[in-house]
Image (cartoon, rainbow, N blue to C red; front, side, top):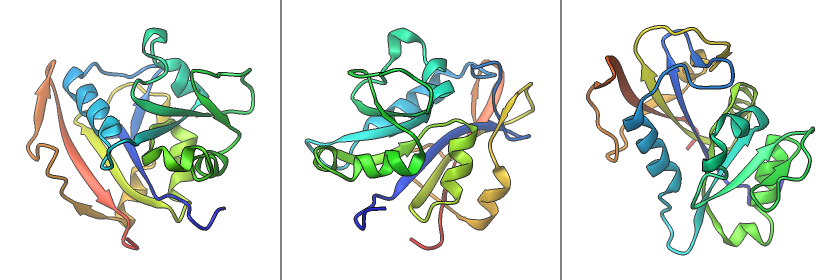
Length: 188
């Protein structure tokens, strides 16, 4: 791993049982939540730089084709099985490779904030990394039928913090309530 490895954030919407997906899609439709996702993962802190989103192959294909790649972001897909995704996205064989790619030229000078956006195995690997900074969790109230899960128990090792860009109160959409929560690793 390069010594100037970037710290990264993780962003996820999960229901009370940790469920994050079902049959290659989201178990719920929350347009407001999707807008927050787009805003957080797109807004960079440094002018002239873009944020990067790292995702697994299933997550890439769960994005409607017309929305791939996620615009105004550098897209990196972690996979061992795809044919070339260029020019839509970069490819890496592991999360570590993806982070290394973003820390070497030419991308090192173009990337601001790195976001892990799913799915299940990338989220699990993220918690094993010393470079995890924050987890942006949209806690969806209730349980939904899911076949992909997020390790919610990992959040107990982190401390909850406030990001002023996000509303603190419970949001409601399509009869579904949800709340934004931000967790930070204690080492930062």
